[in-house]
Length: 420
Image (cartoon, rainbow, N blue to C red; front, side, top):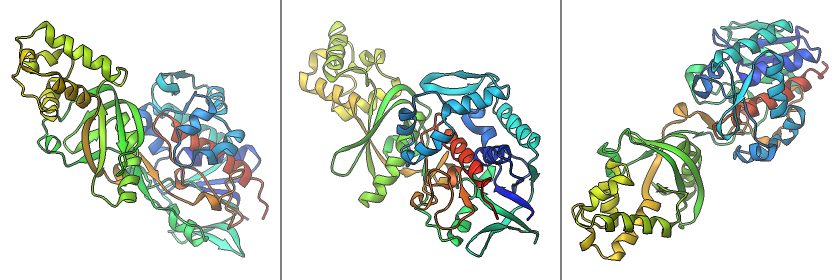
């Protein structure tokens, strides 16, 4: 037998599974098709690498809307707190930023990549790069090694598939692991983009009149075809030449994808609340008082105190108010419409950018076929999965990397215990 454990994929889950397997006494081989390990990790968190999140465990689970509850067992094995202690034990000082996000004090993702690779090497893991895997070897009903595209076969007691999803493909995430999972008898749930910009055919998007407009501390809601709110997320956003982007939009995107599929319709209604912290009545009073102070001034100019210039014509049009009308000439009903529009500016979304342009892949290896305590296949003994190849996805903010590290550690530890 050449190795105890073969790990395919040198991303966060693959590197962590190597460390866990080697720490537990296994002879480990790490195989990657690229020329560089940790490429996606190196660009994560805007190049700063959001290694985990410091929120309580239940909050972390709630921020992994794609099957987060599956991770309870993995977090019992290797929790976010353990991740923090792991990196600090390797000499990487971390700092907590808004929403519990944990970054290296260096603000450099490469710091994290380098220390992981160094630890892998220190533990004696053999690494081969530029070595695409052709297929995983299944022999006598269990995983038994890999065939490389060079023609070489390498045997092992267990195999860990840590190949990622299909998002950000230039880093090597091109969905290689799905066919190997299917060959073992696994189901791959529908793949779709998550944490991805949203597209819209609205005239004000197509005309690019709002392009580049950034809005801070807004709330974006997604509605189903029956008029029920599916989700609401607060944060920042930006209008683009094709639609909407920014943190609040990325968090809403998977719900746009799912509702389009569920409803069979061509668009999904979104509403933008420009002042989520202000109740409707308070906003109405503030707008009324602003205009009353300058009753001879055109309402479009009065609103410049409260709204971004680019949005004023659109908001007034939606509310049915002419731009040049003054306070003296507006009945109370249009003011109520104006406040309603500012609290729920409607935008029809018609989709998202592609899975290749998404930060995270939705869907993957069906979790009913995976033991959550070990990450081992329930179908093929000796075969393990970790990271984004699984049907697990979270919001941006350190949640996906946390899931990758936890599942990677769990897979590595348990793969090391498999005997041939």
